[in-house]
Length: 246
Image (cartoon, rainbow, N blue to C red; front, top):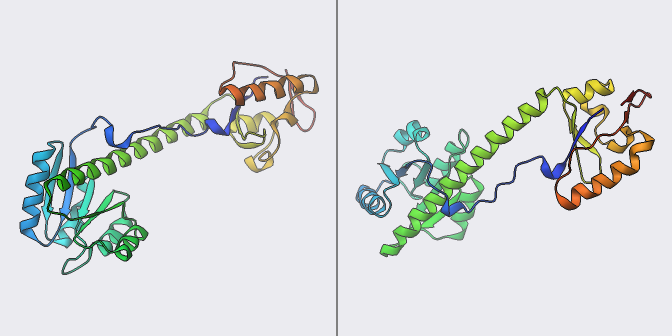
């Protein structure tokens, strides 16, 4: 009987990503909130001129921003505003969304930055007047959006893999590097005649291998860990009540 064992190092797809050099998926839509309207217009003009992939929608109305932020890829907000500071605004948004948020402020206070990160802010950029500063700001915006999009794609990919794992007609078990079962699909439970994952979780997968195949299975597990892959192999399996699966 063939039972697929997957080591835990293969459970999650691992993305090696250079966050700041990804090919842009699409235009980046930024909601920039500040009660200094002159600064809003100047920042929008400079950033859009520096990077045509970035489009800034400016707003000095916090309530309007709270109603419309879901239409954007990232939120850039001042810290000190009349009706609500940027950290409080970020905290409200974070209760409903995981969109990236950057505080863009004249204040460089460590206490404010700590408060911002505690409330779910992704980055904290201090306002400066040097032209090069706007290149840095544009890069920070793109980095946060690239990271967000990549993480979202990874989550969606893992969810698809999880669904395939669960509905597969083939018995598949996920094991840690010591061979202990940490997850399995419904087909595995049915094969061994149990109802729940808890009944097999933590058991060593070798306990289900027939005595004549144990040495071979141990050798294959060692090779899998060393090489990172394993060719197709078959063992005779046995349930805890003695039923054998050739």
